[in-house]
Image 1 (cartoon, rainbow, N blue to C red):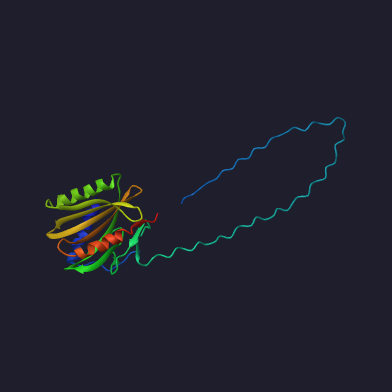
Image 2 (cartoon, rainbow, N blue to C red; image 1 turned 45 degrees about the vertical axis):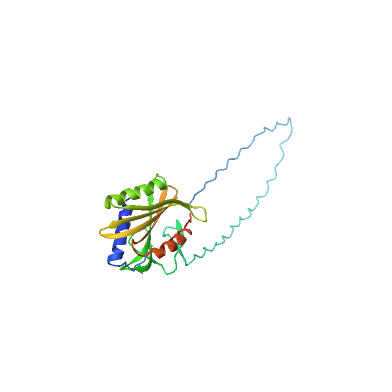
Length: 223
């Protein structure tokens, strides 16, 4: 859950100083084959001269041709789509937003300016066995500890058009004197919680909420 504290601090930096412009960029199978042979004794013939055996000419083995490997072309990535650096997930980038290095595991997305800062989306991954709903509760507990007046605006179980379930949790709270609203979109894949955190001032930028929701509906796991 330490990632969540860092994410909150990133939003504060965006509203205060502005972001950095830098960007970052088998299965093995084994087969074993066993062969068995049966031995049948040949009876010995009485008073039969041993025939002279003509040696069987040695056959020249036919060389085995090595099949030519056909290179499968790498699929072309959609330039309008955000792809996680480790290839685990992707989603559409809202029009006008750009990727941005925030010093986290994944690059984030930065949108239009709102007040003295910008609306942002940040991506995190955390291994945990709790459910998505329990993870959402843990997020709220963490933020409540930093601001006792934190308000849970909404918490809903959602499904993308592609059938991917997620939790959408909207929270208003004060971060070092700055009133912010953060929406946590919590997905799960293989025991890891992948969270998209959309941040904006509590009193501005609401016009981008629907834009972000629309982008989240394109979220998918690539592996």
